[in-house]
View 1 (spheres, one colour):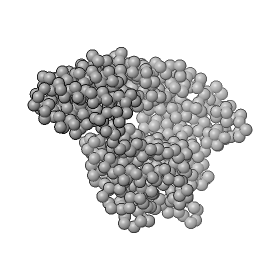
View 2 (cartoon, rainbow, N blue to C red):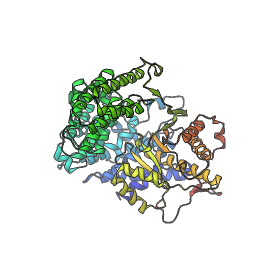
View 3 (cartoon, rainbow, N blue to C red):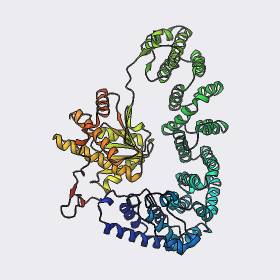
View 4 (cartoon, one colour):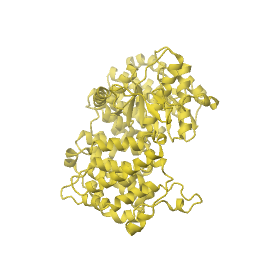
Length: 633
């Protein structure tokens, strides 16, 4: 029951084919939901905590599910108010009750099933679960709090606080008391997931206490950073990266102050700096805090290389060059001074590496400016044969010129050691509530909710797999074995900065119309999955624009046109990135051309039609999907 029901409910509530079902079917589903509410309410009367059924309850109470959105204008049955009295927990917003459009956005059905849950002693039994003599896990606490998170706008807040204040405080105390032994026993990520739910609850129902929750959140990160457990350190750095990249969660000035006060940078640098994935996360922290690093700290970071392994030194150099892009002129000068001190006592081979490092630092300071690589190479031999100080003065002068240009004090024409190189800047266009962006870059480096890979592109697939790690490779192999005919395989992101990876089934075709329709189907399927996961950002590679030999214009035009149509038709608040490889400038130009082109051709899109895998009944106008007998869909 606890395995099959959640999967079935998810398909009923979140499928976009809900809108095609008859009123009779819709009412039958609502009746089934009521029965399921009764069932879950009874199941909560005994232990253990039914985690999966509580996840199902959260889906039933989700005001953003396709089913609830479909029926958001349903009137509310006020008979519950008479039966429950002051026990009523959900009610339509006052703005919908007293508006001119009396029944607009009342979410009557949603409020009814919440109050039905109260009537069937669901709340009473749910609260009893918190009283278990055995210590609950973070996963169980998460399941117990989750049901009402996505329907807070339709709850009577005072009543919710009255019911659950004690339990919420209990969960917060649990998080504050976590120690290294707890992290060994339970999934480390569960603690952060639980905190995420708590922060949502506090933001809505106890907004005056949000700062305290944020402090607990930061303290948990600090606690995990100091542990010897590698997974704990990685999870803490992942969470730190999230709050750095999203200033809405916690203001940046608060994060900066906390990082400096608690020496978090130095605590993470004491860790596994020989591990590439670890240092990738440290780099995000380093880049964020770079403008606030003192001269003394720059010198300390530089000296960390002494006595380290070759791999660790390489990682430290990468960290330094990345941070240099955020340094001011004074910081850069001090860094160069540190490098020069090392230069004077290093061997010839080490001096060569330092010159290369300086060149990279110069390029990092501004993406559109290129330091004098040719001059560096020409001066390398005399540097190694004579006094290094003469070249040092040249390099320092050139770097200072670079910073001057970067800060607007100089122009490229005022110095002969900097040349401006062509730069293809990212472009973007707003479509309804969404945004389409085109940029040069690497798909695996995109900090979005999901990246898309094509199962037919072995080079791209291999690159994503290698970067994501062995766990993702095994997960893909397992998922593919179970669902070889699936149109989209959704895999965890592993070591990548995104949340998920969608591997889409797509094969090129020499027939122009078939090729175009295959791209339309691909985009449609990806968008469906994005909606299912409630993602708000996605990155596509230039699918089919590699070595297949097809018309780039047709492929790009179809992709861009279909994305425009999906955003316009569905009115999605979605950011769509097309990420083009640096060695494909002509593909980048074609994408820019199509994105910036007039939208008059939108009417010719196939996006309003169902994908080619769907057929339409001539009898009842219902949509049906053709799938293989072996497919799980």
